[in-house]
Image 1 (spheres, rainbow, N blue to C red):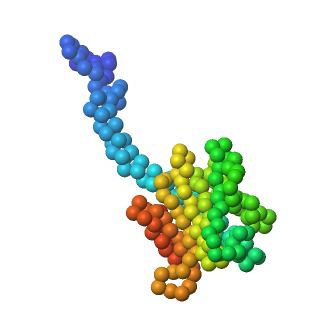
Image 2: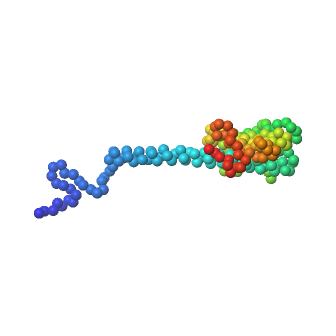
Image 3: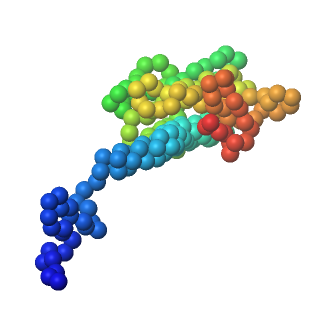
Length: 199
């Protein structure tokens, strides 16, 4: 009996080649792979977006904490929370930037008095990039103050305001720092900064 000189090939009409390594994929196989990738992406993408948002919110938190420490340092040196805080009136100061990362001018600016050893520089936590939040500080005499971080539209920050308030705590006679975030249904506040949740 003569051997077929071409292994894996059947002679005769309608011959087919059999190979353990097919030369391509069938349409069903390709659609299966695409479906699996789509399912993985559907689960992974929301988690990726959530983690990215957390990082941006953390940037605002760090800046607010930095600003609160600077205000406390200023108060320790000058016995008031801001230069004009010598009466019972409310006084406000702000920090904001234009699209080129240049600080806006005009009005009462935080950087006009938080200078030198207690200089305010929100870029420390943003690697020199344009800040994603506007920062507003308001104080009433030497009794209370509030610092608010408001996301700037178009700069990628999640739409959540953050706030640190120094005021009387409900049910007590003590003033303490309260750490707040807007979760969509109003401000949620904590006395412990480690519980200052993003979601």
